[in-house]
Amino acid sequence: YEIVKTIGSGASCKVKLGIDTVSGKKVAIKIMKEDMDQKDKNLLRTELQAMSLLDHPNIVKILKCGNEPYIKTSGKEPRNVDFIALEYAAGGELFDFIANSGRFEEPIARYYFKQLLDGLFYCHNQSICHRDLKPENLLLDGEFNLKIADFGFAAPTMGRDGSGYLQTKLGT
Figure 1 (cartoon, rainbow, N blue to C red):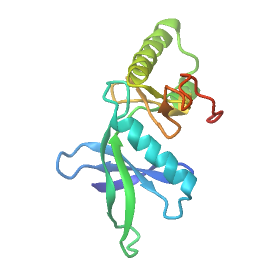
Figure 2 (tube, rainbow, N blue to C red; figure 1 turned 30 degrees about the vertical axis):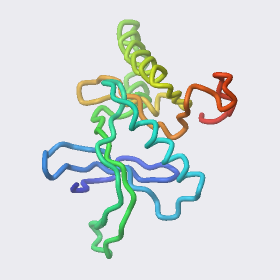
Figure 3 (tube, helix red, strand yellow; figure 1 turned 90 degrees about the horizontal axis):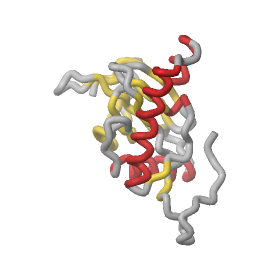
């Protein structure tokens, strides 16, 4: 991948816009920070496990993950980084879209709500619960279709005690 620019950041990573040098397609690349603690490493592992089970038009797809050399444009010495290459959502976060355009009229709200429910129904049928749904984790692709992202807090829908209920309080 060729790195173009930074498009976001989180507690454990920076998200870069990249270009797949083979296909020419834009991708989002999460580059993990070197000093990730065990908690962040566990969240990353959870995200990869959950997203590897999911293949739905309203869920961001993982394209590749690994550990490869990263060369910064500043000319610093290359270093190996852990990364996840994801489907690029050119429309950005639903949160920003709402902030810039105001509240949705009912037909548009229904359109996005149906896409959200379709994606969640699929997740739940795959025994995955997202657990951090918020407008910042709902992205829009280049055609303004909704994509559910950030499965770091995901969990199996069956509780560890077999009750079927998730007990942990977390997320926003």
